[in-house]
Image (tube, rainbow over all chains, first blue to last red):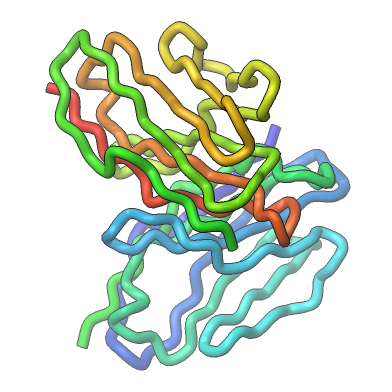
Amino acid sequence: AQKVTQAQTEISVVEKEDVTLDCVYETRDTTYYLFWYKQPPSGELVFLIRRNSFDEQNEISGRYSWNFQKSTSSFNFTITASQVVDSAVYFCALSPYTGTASKLTFGTGTRLQVTL
Amino acid sequence: SAVISQKPSRDICQRGTSLTIQCQVDSQVTMMFWYRQQPGQSLTLIATANQGSEATYESGFVIDKFPISRPNLTFSTLTVSNMSPEDSSIYLCSVESPSRSDTQYFGPGTRLTVL
C-alpha cells in the first residue's frame, strides 16, 4: 500500500520569507513517481513537478525547489521569497512507475498562507 | 499540457437525485481518471476510465453509485446517483498528459452540494 504524509496542516508566513513544505511517503514499489500539486482558492489542481524515484537530483524552478531524499523517503518543497500569490493548498502525491499514468495517492495537503 | 473543461462547475442538488458531470479534453488521451475531494480533505481516486473498456473502480466506490461513460478519447462523464449530503464534494477529472506520460493534469472541478 502507498501512503503520503504531510504533517504540516497549515503554515503562515510573511511575504518574502522562505518556507519548506514537508512530504514523507511509504511504498513497497522499487520504482515510483512523486508529484507536487498546488490548489489555489479557485479549486483547480495545478501540476508543479514530477520526480522519478531513480533520479535523486534536486530541482530548482524559479523560486521553487525540491529536495528528494530516498534514504529518508522524503520529497520536500521549498518556496524562496514567498509571495501572496503562493497562498494555496499544496499536495504531495505518489504513484507507481508503470509507464502510463496511474492512481495518485495524495497526502492530506498543507495550507500555506502568505501575508503582507 | 491538455486543456480540460468540466460541466457544471458547481451545482446544488436535492437528496435522492442524480447529477452527471462532464469532462472534455482538447486532445485525445488514453487514460482519464475521476477523483473526489470531500470538504477540507485530500483527493481520492474513484475510478479509471479508458476508452473502449469498463471503468475500473477503487475500493469503496461502486458502479451503481458512480456510473462512468467513456465514449471517445476526448470525453467522459461521471454520474453521482441517488445523492445524499455525504456526496457533497468537489469532483475532478484528470487525464494523462499527451506529452508527458505518467503525469496527470486536472480539470477545474465540479463543486457539488447536496441538500
